[in-house]
Image: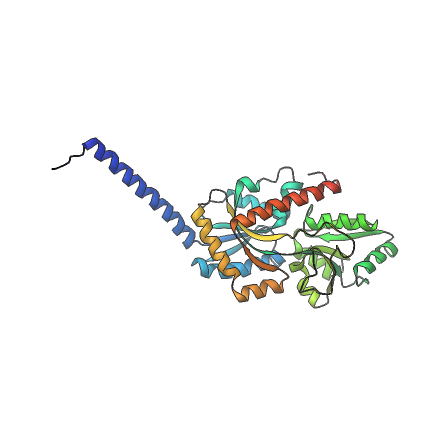
Length: 332
């Protein structure tokens, strides 16, 4: 017995099938575009700094996993704010990523009234790959060799006053300077720079006696003796700096929550694309040479899923919202 389908129903079914095929083609086309790239990784700090060096290690290895060119684009300025705004404006197709540490994503929205982006709304976490600690380091021309000697030197030669470099204004390193000053009753003023590279230049030239920043910013020059790291954040001493005490050991508690490094994409990036890049990131993090190189820079290496990175970012923001409030800082 022959069953006839009314022409109207045949037309409707055909349209639905074709529509579904078109949608699938668009989705696959988007994934293919993300794979064929090139993929651009935005970095909010100048070339030559710790974040830039880390981004170039990751880009070099991600290209093999993604099967496309991966390039680093430095959009320095305003503590990563310019790069973050560029990510927000980028196409949500997986071809533009943002490699950032905690400052831009977690801290800037707490200290700037109108940063031009809202992480929860404008970004999607792709994956994390490391944590690290911030530290206080002394320039080679500073006579002090330890935190205790530095405090005594500021009180004596500096008559209680000192200037400490920070890689960005209203950053964790700047709030660390405020807390050190409060702890030891010193008048310490922050000297903000546009990234760690220019700050390191002044430290190496003995233009500034001390600086705060991440271990990746300091480690190479510490190894050669050109500067001296005298205290680190975190709950334990760093394996790469076993002789350097934590701030908690020195009686300055509250800096135990570790900052992070991660990759972010524009909001609206397809979940399949995010998962593909995150899987590639996980494979890169597992490579022995990547683990070795990032560890040598002072990072604690470990993959975080998109969900884990997002949860860590939110928890870190809550912790620092409380600390910033205690300093009396008013968002600018």
